Image (cartoon, rainbow over the protein chains, first blue to last red):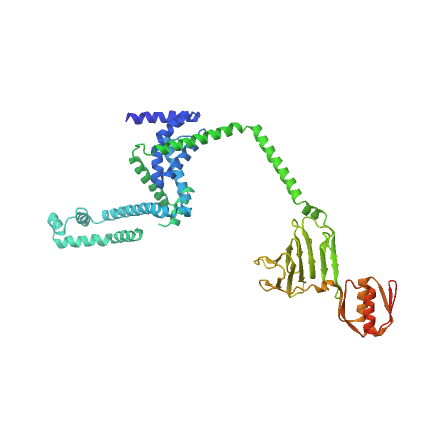
Length: 194
Length: 322
């Protein structure tokens, strides 16, 4: 914890040094942030070489524009923002170069498809939760006991002191109300699986 | 997701035009990478790259600072001076390089036009001492002086014996064909009304173009080859071992069933003599035959008087026919 605090104090001082064209301060800043930035760019683009280029561009532009830069939050977030922007620009150029097609097909597109898939799933889970919460309390309870706690119909009937047929009827009502969301979820699964 | 979709998402994000969904996708991409990066511990596994990149950055910074200290206003002025000098030099160079074209533009060269009628064959010596023999009903246009290029215009038929000059090509712009040579002899037959334009080669190499046919590639002809192009039809044809007829080039006047009166006036014009006749018979007779260049007037008259039983009397330039 104390290490982190010294770096935070150090950051501001380092950057003031960079703005005074202090090469040593610049070097310290570089060595401090090399690894997180390089690693970040590499996770984004899945290429060590591209990550290397990006970190180089970011640090060079910091040096070149040191007089004009105003740090609003922290140097760390400024640097990450810069890597984000450069990576996005790089991604744009990769997507437009036919010689990178293998990499696009095998790494970049699957990564984005995965993101899309997860986002859609999240949306549906939210939607489903919303619809479940809109069910009548008794129906919702039976449904959750069945799906979330994986209780059998007999167990639910025993636990709630109702007949098995009532449990069946309630589950039927719940599934009927939710079938739209569930169907959409199934369709998306089919569509997004390559 | 397809490539085009991803391209659009990235492009929209960079230009600030993302939809909410597109924005979320890109931000999720950042989030995932950031989380994965934060998990990675620095074990010095990328130290080699770290040192390399820092070396690169340092080199660029040092080079730029040298450039910056050298970039004072004074040297900027000097730099501009060099630019100006380069501009002037290139203008001078271009003016020199295209001096002939420029002088042609400012003062067009004087052009000669030689025309032959239906009986005449004329020999023309061009400014570079190339020889052109113009067949009947033809027209040749050429400048008084050739400069960087040797260009003439032809309508009709002509035999060209071009003086060799490897530096300056000779171009004949005929009615349908363009012929480029360095030094050869060849015959072109191509008038405005021609249905089939022809080029036949006697010696050397000749390049023929059909300017109207943009797709047609230039044809290279060798001796005894004849190129023919039926106007309006696609490509030209090359015929090997063609008989290139140049016999007519030795002739001076050619007549086919021509009334004698016209023969006499053609002779008068070509040989610069005056011919008078009171004999009306000559208008009823026709003559078929040709006279050669080396035939002199006495020879010509003798042939005619023997053929038609005419009495021809020559006094200097005046000729009386009875």
